[in-house]
Image (cartoon, rainbow, N blue to C red):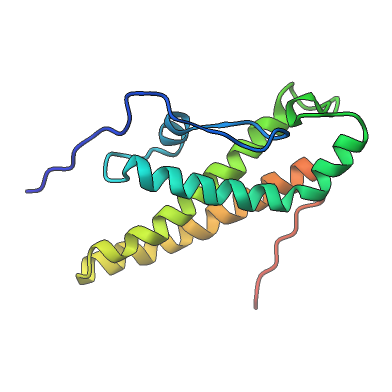
Length: 153
């Protein structure tokens, strides 16, 4: 039997983002992506920062275009008529959280070198790919681009 300590931070940890994009709340990420105490706060924060950098780079041209239109923050960019208020911010958070979780899944693969551990990691590779797909779709939705799925035959 093994014991995995539950937890994480009890104090709110806010990761400051570029002025255009929303700051990230570590506990919201943990809750949304169902991270338990095996992922330390430092590791989760590092994954969130890397994901934030990737998402921001992907949206750099979009950000510039929106700023040129006079919108100083993603939350101020008007949503399309058929979307509820705040859609772009939620899509941004989805993209960052999915990228961060995909990163964590891959990094935790090396913790168990037994056959069982590799079998579980192999099953999680699909999840990592799914998370990256979800992130890509969220970023495309923010930009207003069509989604593309390519599959090798």
